[in-house]
Length: 87
Image 1 (cartoon, rainbow, N blue to C red):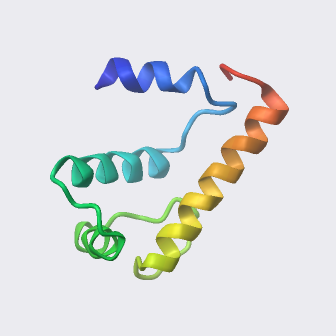
Image 2 (cartoon, rainbow, N blue to C red):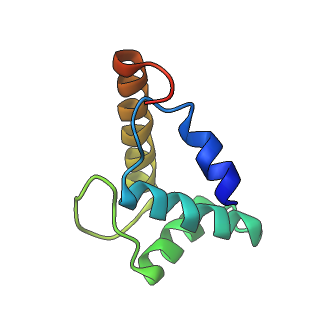
Image 3 (cartoon, rainbow, N blue to C red):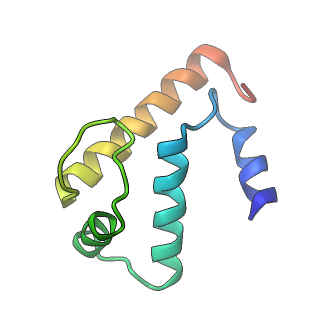
């Protein structure tokens, strides 16, 4: 929900990028439909044409999904450490 998303930004050290928000929305939609197998998630991201937040190109796979999520988390952790909560 919009309220949920607005509140979630208060915990971040930086705003999420459009690509990160798009990935998050796609993942939420899949999980809501009961899609939890990460190979299936990667296949659906490919079918939807979801761009990788890192800007890298190529197909989604289990490995790229894991790498993208780790990179997002590391970036948010670093921003939080540098900027604190609510940036």
